[in-house]
Length: 49
Image 1 (cartoon, rainbow, N blue to C red):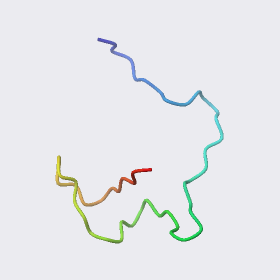
Image 2 (cartoon, helix red, strand yellow):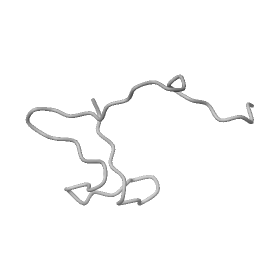
Image 3 (cartoon, rainbow, N blue to C red):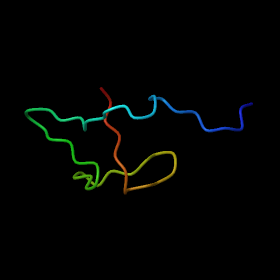
Image 4 (tube, rainbow, N blue to C red):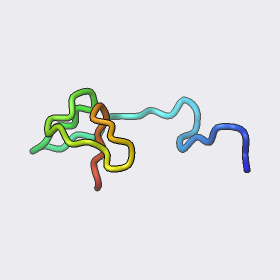
């Protein structure tokens, strides 16, 4: 098992937030108040694409 962190993007890759015309993406404020079924966290948000 690797002991170093794994990165999905190469260093210095330009990253842009996901945004749709009809529903803007705002990761800092989940609007619907749902909680994670695994850990119960209500401060993060996951969108399934």
